[in-house]
Image 1 (cartoon, rainbow, N blue to C red):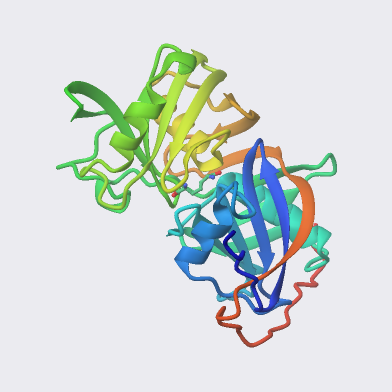
Image 2 (cartoon, rainbow, N blue to C red):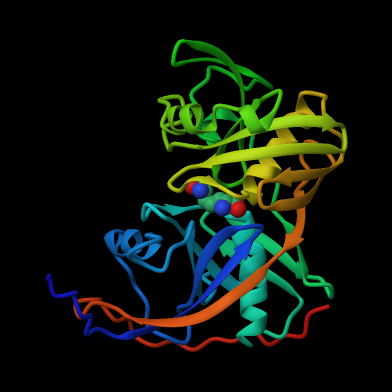
Length: 304
Ligand SMILES: N[C@H](CCC[C@H](N)C(=O)O)C(=O)O
């Protein structure tokens, strides 16, 4: 019988959380040394041999003035990415519950820009996800000029795709019924399509009426998840630009409902939804895990 690898490295404290079933391992890298290589993240993401998560969220001290924290996001495949909407809500709940801040309005620096998180008294979190980016070069998406809908040939099919960045790249397809949409086949094809040089999250959007939609998302680096916050924002932007959705949309995902509001071009996308703590845990990392020097930080200005 093979001897299980007994890790002799440092103990790592973490919290398991989810936003509508999109689940996260959350690590406070302020109060404890933390650095993981991509292969370690992949191991920890495994739902049989590791903790199991869609994304790893890391809390770090801010790197910018007027910002409370830095928020790093890693997909299950170990890739570091620019944005995670469901994760942002869990981030806000986490830093409050861990007493890393006593503020109710928190400004957070991500690789995709600065976002603002507002904790509601009912347990919901309101996130200003920033202004969507629609220029192909900034998404990035390979196209000669910006269009509301791009024709794309994939697997012998001619599709009409919207392309939006919420800090991270999204492709959005309209479908008749999300329950029968080809998420498992078309999702991976489009995630890695050459038109998306940085890969992309692929949303399958079923419009019910101008205030209601259903959505499934095949996420870059994690596969289909039960919910995707930035994907819901990108889908509402795409649907609104196509003249099919209004300013306020209730988006039903497999894991539950998000409320997305967008006033139109140049305006930020607002997302509101839940953030749930499942359990707190600790694990011992392999002995060769590189420790980092300890840092202390607490954002203490009283917020609104
Ligand atoms: N897979 C995404 C990151 C997580 C986004 C999602 N979990 C959300 O709630 O926005 C990407 O590679 O851009």
